Amino acid sequence: MTSEPSPHDLLELRRLIDAYGLAVDTRDGERFAAVFTDDGVLAIYEPDEDDEPSSTIEGRTALAEVPQMVAGWHNTMHLMANHYCDVDGDEGTGLVYGLSLHLKTGESDVDTYMVQRYRDRYLRVDGRWRIARRDVLRQWTEYHPAERARLADTLDG
Image 1: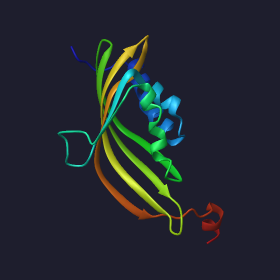
Image 2 (image 1 turned 180 degrees about the vertical axis):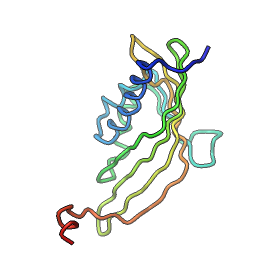
Image 3 (image 1 turned 30 degrees about the vertical axis):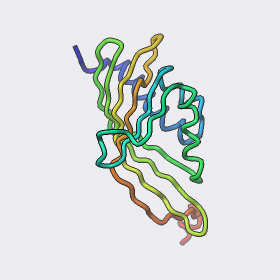
Image 4 (image 1 turned 90 degrees about the vertical axis):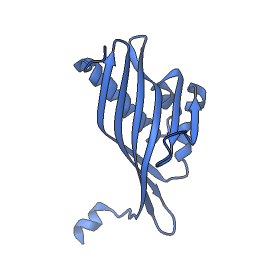
C-alpha cells in the first residue's frame, strides 16, 4: 500500500534529488551515476511528446557520461523545487519540478531556461534510496540575455 514517506525517507529522497542536480552542475559523472540503481534509466521526453522518449540512457556506465552533455555551456544550475513522493516499502514514486539554467558565454551571453518535471521511480538498495528510472519531461525553454557583471560594480552603479 502506497503511503506518505516517513520523515527519514523523505529527507533521504530529497537529498537524492538534490544530489542529481549538484552532480550535473559540477560535471561529476561518478556522483551522477551513484544516484541511480546499477540498471537505472534516464529517459528524456520533449515538450508535448509524452509517448516516446527522444533519448534513453541506461546503466551506471552510460549514466556517468550524462554530465558531459552540458559541457557546451559555461555554467549550469539545476534548481530542484517541489518534490512529491509516495513510498511502498522499499519502492517509491515521485514527481519533481525543476528549472535548469544554462549559461552560454561568448560575443553575447545567453541564459537558457529549461522548465521540466521529473517523474521518478525509486528503489531502496542496501538501505539507501536510488533512482531506478527518471523521466525528464521537458515543458518549455526560454532564452534570455545574461550579464556576468561584478556585484560590486552593480552596487556602485
